[in-house]
Image 1 (spheres, rainbow, N blue to C red):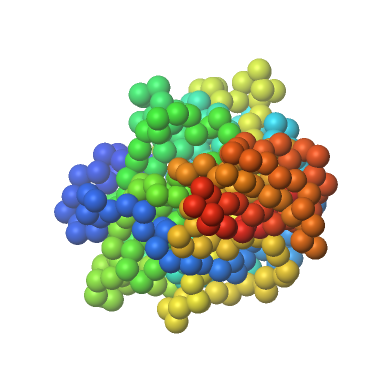
Image 2: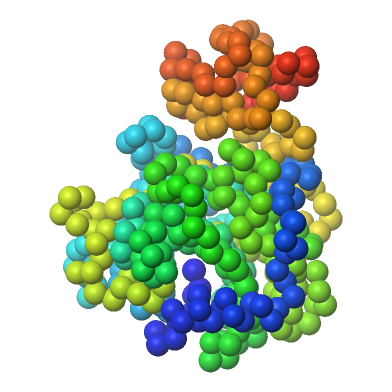
Length: 404
C-alpha cells in the first residue's frame, strides 16, 4: 500500500507506469518458476490467532489513529473504535475485525482501521501467512496486507522499502467489472520519490473465482535471493507465485538488494477511496450502502511468521509461547483446511487418503474415517488434536490441528 504516492500521478504510476517500467528491470521470474514455497522446512516463530475478545497491543500491535489520507488521498479517518476482535459470523472463526463505516468524523466522511507491528514484531527473511476474509470491495474499498522496513521513521519512504503482499480495490478491477477477483502485489524501494520514478515491480492478476467469497491465505516467501507472493498455498501447495523478484544483486543504492535485507514490520488496513481506487467522493463508494448499514468488515483469522533457522534470518518480538500450530514442512502430500478448524475440515491433496484418524494429545483415538477428504468435526470439543493420515501405499503423515 504505497505510502506516499502523490494525488495527481499515483494511479497512473501504480499500474500503467509500473507495468511499463518493470520491463526494464531484471527482477521478474523465469516463466517456469513455480512451487518454490515448498522447497524447505519452516518453523513457527510468531503468530497472532486473535483469540479472546481484545487485541494484544502489549506484545503485538500498534493501532494507528489519523486522518492524513495515507499519502494517497484516501477518504477515511482511522480510529481505534474500528479495530476489534470477535467472531466472523459465517465460519464462527475468532478474528481481527477491521470495520469501514460511512460516517462523519474528524473532518472526514468515513472511518476505518489500520494497525501495525512496528516496535512490537519485525523480522528479516522467512515466510509470513495471513488468512483473510476480504470485504466486498465493489467501488471504493481498498483492503491491504503489507510490510514496511523497520527503519522507516529514520530514512523515510521509499528508502525503507515496502512489500505489498495483497491489495484489492484498484480502479482497473472496477473498470473491468472484476472487483471481487482482481488483486495485486507490488514491491517498492529507492532513494527518493523522484517525481514518481522510484524503482518498483510487481504483478496483478484476475482470479478465476471470487476471492471475496470466503477466507483465503496470502503468503510472502522471502530469503537472500528473492521475494515471492502466493495465494492459497494451503489449498494448492504447488501453486506458482503471483510475483517473484530477485534481491540478490549488488548491495548498492538503487538496487533492490540494498533495501530488502533488513527487518520489516507488518500492517493490515482497510482504506476507503483514494488514488488507488479512483474514487474520491464518499457518495461514489458503492461498497458502503443502505443494504449493509453503510459498513463493511475485513476479517483476519490469523497471521503467522515462519523461519528456517538460517544465519541470514533475524527476528525481534515476543517469545513464542507453547503452541500446537503445525510447522510448514517439505514433502508433505496432505494439508488440513481450515486449521484452526470449526465444524468441518478438508484433507487437501491429489492422492485421496485411505484412512484419517483424529487423536487427542494423550494419543486416544476420538474419530476415524476411511476413503474421505471431507470430515465433520462438529462433535469434537475445542482443543488441540493430532491427525494421522494414511495413503494407499501405507505412508503415514501426522499433522497437528486446533479445533475452535
